[in-house]
Image (spheres, rainbow, N blue to C red):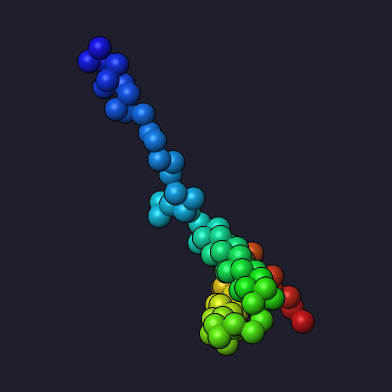
Amino acid sequence: MVVQLERFAMLKIVPDPPFSADPSHHLEDTLIQATEYVLCALSVGHHAISTLPKSPATVMTLAVMHEVEAVRSLLETAIAQVQFKGKPQMHTLH
């Protein structure tokens, strides 16, 4: 019976979080995942504004969405830079 309790105690009840700080993750993958979270946040903001357009919080929601949109733009720029670094540069004689 003790063996069964030990085995039961070893069962994992809570799953791993979707994001891991494992150093084996590539920077590009992390940036893409962050961009997906930002796009979800923007979608929630758009939905909140469309369902409660006259709410006092609408102005704050618009401000937050503006800032999140700036983060999205920075992330997309970073992804482009990472992808550009990964490609071999071609030199021409022209």
